[in-house]
Amino acid sequence: MNNIPSPSGRPPVGRLHVLTDFTFQQRHSHAHLAELAIRGGADTIQFRQKEGAIRDILANAHAVATVCRAHGVPLLVDDRVDVALAVGADGVHLGQTDMPLADARRVLGPEAIIGITAPTPALARAAQAGGADYIGFGPVFATRSKANPLSVRGLEGVLEVSNEVGIPIIGIAGITATRAPDVIRAGAHGVAVMTAISCAADPEDAARQFRSAIDAVAPRP
Image (cartoon, rainbow, N blue to C red; front, side, top):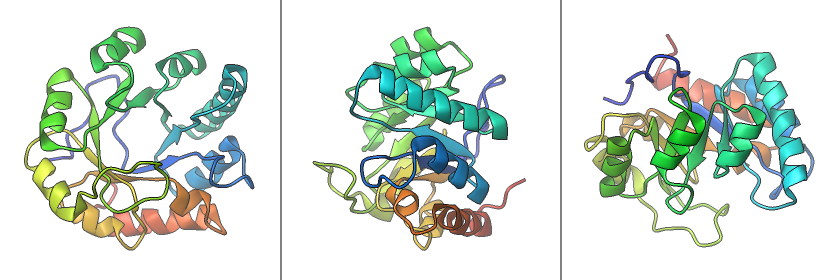
């Protein structure tokens, strides 16, 4: 149900989304994390920077965009439609309090990938009806990357929402390489990961473990 390709002109929705991070670790820049994650098998990079001057955010986003273009990997920007537009990203991932989907589509155009965080089946249905390309569903497990995390949805929540929508579901929050196959089996198309890779001793190897775990249950064509 969840392996429906993106409309013509948009890159396909990847299975291993890696979020860049400079909050929980400072060993690697956003761009270096993107490089390491892609080497390990990430097929989508999401630039995530919540704080800082806009010039600094743009500089970091441009650097990540350069890495992604060099490898032919889609780049999404977390929350910021303006940053995505400025750096020529492939799309955005929006939360429920970010720019509305319809407005983001008008700004970014029909070929942009737009993912929507939807922690309930009702919100997932609304996102699909509004033209979202994928659903970010979670928190599947407990996470420390949110100051005020929502109630954990669990694998049962993934299964429930997968029965409600026909666009790809990306499981988010608390997902490890060991847990990733169960998330896929529960109905998700893929997973989104941040600290499990960014804070790993070897981010490239951590990404490779996720890639192997995902490919074991959902082989790449």
